[in-house]
Amino acid sequence: MTVSETTAAVGVQALRPHAEDAFAHELKALAAADDRPRPARWQLSPWAVATYLLGGTLPDGTVITPKYVGPRRLVEVAVTTLATDRALLLLGVPGTAKTWVSEHLAAAVSGDSTLLVQGTAGTPEEAVRYGWNYAQLLAHGPSRDALVPSPLMRAMSEGMTARIEELTRIPADVQDSLITILSEKTLPVPELGQEVQAVRGFNVIATANDRDRGVNELSSALRRRFNTVVLPLPATPDAEVDIVSRRVDQMGRSLDLPAAPDGMAEIRRVVTVFRELRDGITTDGRTKLKSPSGTLSTAEAISVVTNGLALAAHFGDGVLRPGDVAAGILGAVVRDPAADRVVWQEYLETVVRERDGWKDFYRACREVSA
Figure 1 (tube, one colour):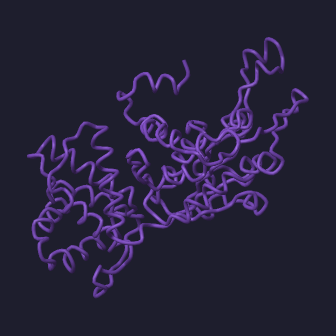
Figure 2 (cartoon, one colour):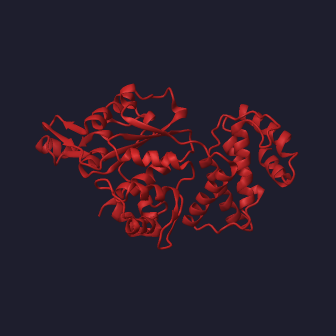
Figure 3 (spheres, helix red, strand yellow):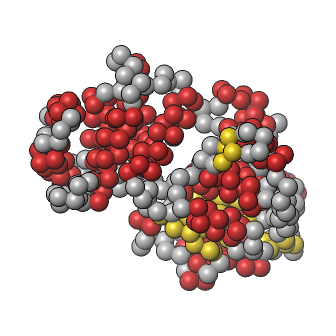
């Protein structure tokens, strides 16, 4: 039984199902309603893939939930890129849903989001190309049976979409092993005197954090092999509140957390705090602020609210209150204990204390900050 089959077997028992499992009913409904041309080995047409990402209602009444809230044109460019021979690079600051979009694109295009290379400072070349089963290698010498394919090699052989997370975290010499794969669509195996040629349908989605500039920047040769789509932070507070509330609801259901009545007020408060400190100015534009060292991303806001829901459910009355999110906000803001604590205290005293309707939140933050 494969990993995907095992995950499907446990079903709702999986803590975090893959996109193709969690939204299988939506993908099936889209496939049934999709009568548009599909590129080779694509599960859906480009139009249906974009609909899966952005949401919509099908003719039979099936509601497709939005997976990404942002400019439609960015999603269309990303999907169109995958339909060509160009690889896709999703670039953005932390918390702009790069991994989330990457996973859902792979699920919609290939029906499998698990062909993944996780980029780290220690990612070896074998993770990108191939490795060896050393027991087989020592017993019988180099052979196809002894070869252990990487996720990219599997994707090439099967015409699937491979994913590379945190590309700029990968050492430069390992990054460059992608150049032949992306330009020639072939992977030489000199030990066997053979090569693996990509079949139609193969492509690569990579993500990179633009806060990592200077870590392992892409060479110009490799960058030319990608079409880059920059995912922005949510443009408006309402858009960010919508994203946070949707993801918190999904995560809460997967963790069996009870829905918090009137939780939207605290979600909006968390988003407001994060946006003001991130932008360095209050929402009304009247007060300039110092920004802390952390990113205060949408993903962190989701984490703060989810943790607050767990506190409210297990140690409160089930209602999400300021005290449930105060500690999470403090942890997200104060990453540098010296500099960030000063920024946070100044924000509390000059903005939060004077804001109408925020007295309970001010007291809760003062309590956890003491």
